[in-house]
Length: 295
Image 1 (cartoon, rainbow, N blue to C red):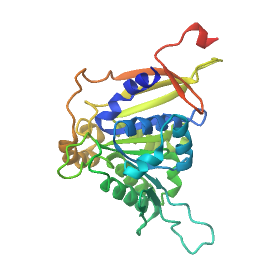
Image 2 (cartoon, rainbow, N blue to C red; image 1 turned 180 degrees about the vertical axis):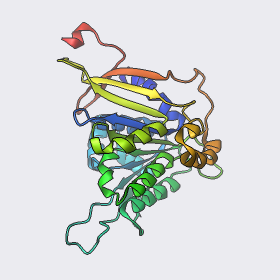
Image 3 (cartoon, helix red, strand yellow; image 1 turned 135 degrees about the horizontal axis):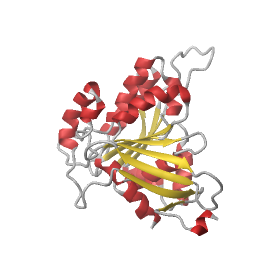
Image 4 (cartoon, rainbow, N blue to C red; image 1 turned 135 degrees about the vertical axis):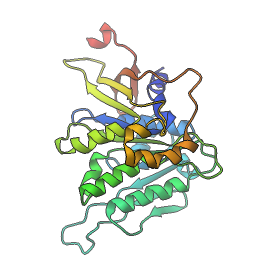
């Protein structure tokens, strides 16, 4: 039942575009990114996972506890892990830091020239372009944009990278009828210096899933997750106008091929909330809480 509840909450994200998972230093949204990873793989998406906060080994361990083998999806090409380039070591001759690496069956993808963020964007684009033809769609998961901020050399470069993140999976491969491309990115909403770019990114997002702890002592509930569908039907085209001229114009071509029809049951409500209890082994999602959980 818990999976059913989360799938209902995440339903708008499957309509394409950018989903922000907004946690805090007190309550990380990393476990929600893991839930999205599981959801996309079970839906037969090709997933590009950018591991900025946690390693691939962490995701493999967590998935194994949930009965899912990530190695199997790597072998079929349905999962590619891209590790961001590291920051330069003081005194090193390599001022731009090490190159990003991409783990997949048959070898690594990545490298190239340019700044650290440019190389990371290129590695993600290469992984998206090489997704299996049999994949139902493409999803790019960035576990923490907040952890990537130090890689930016300027505000302009960071803005360009955020633009890339918002559109990374939008364009389908030629000749393929696939579901809309999806991007899920984790952020920490209470880092003061990040608020300007985060506010702009929220405005561009199709869905914002925000985690909040419950006040007081609650025995079996960690907090509440609220998913807000911010524009149209959740597709890239539906959000083009809200995204502003620069982003909106770039989305038009991709969205015309990637937009999906409304599901049979209609679009999800504009705002949905679930309570949750997260442990290392599982996440329990609850539509409501009883006196027993509040004790």
